[in-house]
Image (cartoon, rainbow, N blue to C red; front, side, top):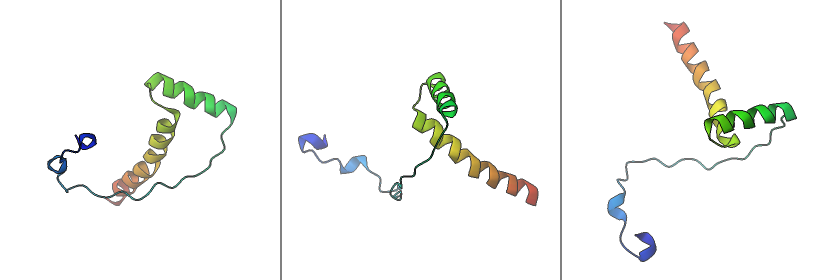
Length: 72
């Protein structure tokens, strides 16, 4: 619609939130680790980058959950 010049403002609710810009990082992996990541990504039919990002996201989430559980 936007490409044809039509008004697309009704498609937005303005209830979302802005995400901060992405910051790039470098990481070194062994050949064996790359192979494992690639095998896992292929098994899940996703990219290696998604495997790395989702795996790294789990670490702080699990840590936060463990801290909440210990406090109780």
